[in-house]
Length: 158
Image (cartoon, rainbow, N blue to C red):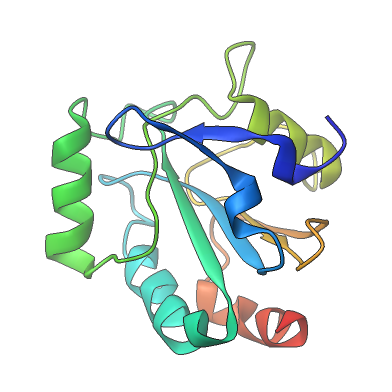
């Protein structure tokens, strides 16, 4: 596929949703985990979302248990954890694989568009991708990069 808007993702309730819905809006797409040392980034992502959603920013969270099984097996537990502990109100989607042969096609696209420092693949939870209003993947951030450090890049896209 040649555009991020051609991908469909699965919502927690099993329904499919086209990324076309987010056309014209800058996005942060992130693979998440509820039981990871980087999990407090949910709070920072939520702060970015609350600050800039009025200007169009979308944050899309994709839970994955591929790194030391740090995500709940039950989708409802994941959603509840994110809401109760971090007040997450940005869209969260169904648990997926983000690396390997069963990686979700969206993450295959993201990693081919913005390669990592040493490898193309996702190395850990909370790898973040910044997408501009035209759907171009413009930057990739390492798991340890605080979402606060993304703010200037986000503001440039708004």
